[in-house]
Amino acid sequence: MARRRRIYEGKAKVLYEGPEPGTLIQYFKDDTTAFNNEKRAVLDGKGVLNNRISEYIMTRLNELGVPTHFIRRLNMREQLVHEVEIIPIEVVVRNVAAGSLSKRLGLEEGSSLPRSIVEFYYKNDALGDPMVSEEHITAFGWASTQDLDDMIALALRVNDFLSGLFLGIGIRLVDFKLEFGRLYENDMMRIVLADEISPDSCRLWDIETGEKLDKDRFRRDLGGVTEAYQEVARRLGLMPGEG
Ligand code: C5P
Image 1 (tube, rainbow, N blue to C red):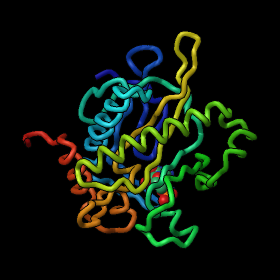
Image 2: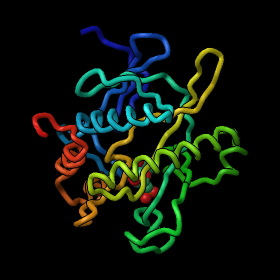
Image 3: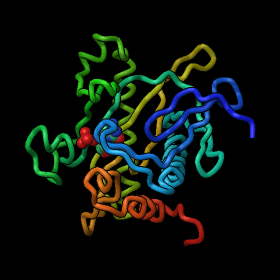
Image 4: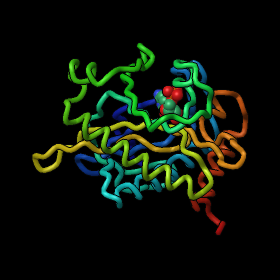
């Protein structure tokens, strides 16, 4: 097979040059990292599951009119995406207290929040992705006020959709992280969802048992990480030979 030009390699994915200008190939690795790369492992088959789960969610979002970089899945580990200019901000939406919010504010994990909360983190490994405010984002020029308004509106729509989707399969959507990019087409720019949406970037708890079906299984050494991701895929109807 011809070797493709590698554009960028992240912790869990690689981006290659795509077949046409303005496209990229997003390759899902089995590598898993946490705590800003301090903890690492290779989990057999995780990339395949995340590729499939993210394909499903991005496809549904595209159908609903939430613009994403996703075009189509190419094979077990790769998807074709639009090339975008990544905005260096991670947008986290929280419905239930957990993780860094619980730690920072002393809230019991699982306690309900008065409303959904949107947070921003500056994507910078050397700084450990610090939390930032809208003021920082616009003052330092990482995104314009309009970009931010679009990102927040899209993040809340994604939250509505995902909360319902997961509720329907017995899963509570505790929180999740999104990334956005600028897509330039026909002299127009619009903000679109980028990266992936998978159990790597969401907290997903079984509604009945409270069992964690996400990357916290890896972060907290709970074991059964790929089995949990498989369970999410199964409930979404994505596992072959079932149904
Ligand atoms: O760690 P924290 O509680 O801030 O994470 C909130 C949500 O964002 C979790 O679902 C986590 O998986 C996700 N996240 C992520 N990538 C990061 C930081 C957080 O996907 N770099």
